[in-house]
Image 1 (cartoon, rainbow, N blue to C red):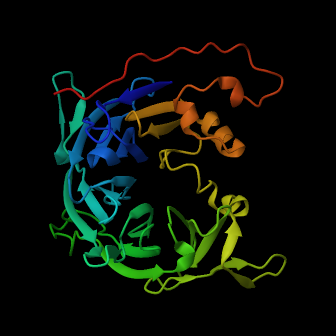
Image 2 (image 1 turned 90 degrees about the vertical axis):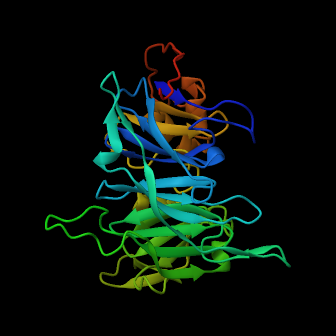
Amino acid sequence: VGFAGDCGGSPPTQSGTLCGARGAYLHGHYLYVAAAQVDTVSVVDVYRPDMPTVAGSVTDAKVLKGVVATWMHRSGEYLIAVARGRRPEGFGHVALIDVRWDRWRTDATRRYLVSPRVVSHLADCSTDATRGLSSGRLCGARAVAVVDETAYVVSEMSNSLSVVVLPARLSEDFMGFAPPTIVPEFVGTLVDTRLEGAYAVAVNGANAYVASRWCKTCVVLVSLEDPGKPVVGGKLPRPGVLGQFDVVVSQEEAIARIALGTPLRGVEFVAKGVEADSAFAFVTTEFDGRVTTVDKKCVSFSADLGESVQQCALSARRVLYDLDFPADPRYEYRANARPNQASG
C-alpha cells in the first residue's frame, strides 16, 4: 500500500531515524517505531496509509540502546520503550518517553511534527568483568505487554519476567497536583530456566504467556495473581467443570492463540495497537529501515502459513497469500516509489 523509509548506509554505520526498525505501536494515526540500530524511537504519521511520513524522533545512546519494543500508555501522554542494549553486556532499559501535546508543533505546510523526550527510565543489569557475565533483571530486555498501569517485561539474557508499575500520568491533575512519581518501578520478578531467551510476552487475565527458547512450539504460563511474586504455572479453567481450575506450566501456542487472539511468535515486526476491524497492518523491516502499510489479510495469512510477515512488506507475490476461492479478479501490483522522510 505504501511505506516510509529513512535509513542510509550499511551496518554498523547506518544513519537515519528508522534504521533497524523493529517493534511498533499505533496510537491514533501515529506509529511509534523502535529503531534498534540507531537507538531511536521514531514517530510515523500514517493518516494516509499509502503515504506514511516520519513526524519526529528521539535518540538516546544509553537508555534507548538497541530499542526493540514500544507501547503507548493509556493516558496517551507517554510511550513505554524497551531497549535490550548491545551484546555481550545487554544493559537493558525500560524508558518513558513524553509525547504530550506541548511536544508537538506544525511546520509551514501545517503538518504536525513532534519532538519526543525521554523523561525517566528503569535499569537493572551489570557485568562481572572477571567472568564476562551480565546479571540483573533487565539484561537483554526484549518485549513488553502493558495493562493499565503495569508493564510486563521479558528479558532474554536474564531469563526473566519483570512486573513494573507505571505512573498514571506525567501531567498535573485538574487540581494542579503533580503525579507522585514519573519513574517506573519494579514490583516483582520471576527468573526461571523455562524463560531462557524469553523474547515475547502477552497478558490475558491473571496469566502471562511467554515465548522462550525453552520450547519451540509452546508458551510458558506465568501466574500474576501476586504481582510481587509471579510464578510459573498459570490457572486455566478446567474443561467441563464449572469453577475449577488447573495449574498449567506450558501450552501449545496454537491453543494459547485462541485465548490471546494473536500468535506470540512471528509477529515481532507487526505493529501492535491496530484496531481489529482495520483493513491495514503495519510491518517494519530492520535491514532497510522501513515501515510498510500492508493489507491486514497478508499478515494473517503469513502467520497461518508459517511465513515471515516481512514478505508482505517485501512485495511478495499476492497469490502466495490469496487463499480465496474462487479466485479474485486479476491483481496488478503497483510499487510505491515514494519513500517519505522527515523534513527539517
